[in-house]
Amino acid sequence: MEKDKQQINLNIVEGDPFFAHEVSMNFTPTQITLDFKCITPRTDPRGNTPSFLLKHNVVMLEPWHAKMMLDVLSNVLKKYEDEFGKISKPKPIQKAAKKQKKASKKKSSTKTTGAPSYLG
Image (cartoon, rainbow, N blue to C red; front, side):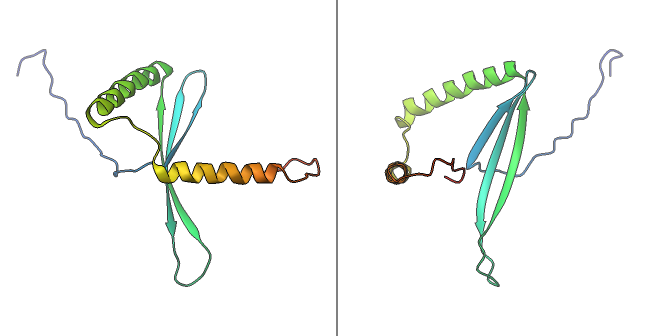
C-alpha cells in the first residue's frame, strides 16, 4: 500500500425497520428535531384495560440540512405524483375528519361555563 493512503474500516449498525404513524417537530436556534412515532394497540387477555406501545425515533438536523431534506422530499413527491397520480387524503381519514368537525360544532353550540377545557 502506498505511503499516503490509509485503509479505513467502516462498521454500519442498521436500525430496525420503522413505520411512523405521526411525527412531531421542534427547533432550537441550532437544530431541527423530528420525532417519528409508531403507536401500536396491545391487548392483554388477563384484563380489560387497553394499552398501547409507543416507539419513537428521533432525528436531529442542522437547519441547513433540514432545508436540503425538504428540497429532496419535494422532488421525490413530485416524481411520485408524476408516476402514480396526485396524493390525496385517504377516504376513511376524510370521513373521520368530517365526523370530528361535526362533533366539535355540536359541542361548541352547547352552553359553556366560561372555564377553559383542556380535554377537548
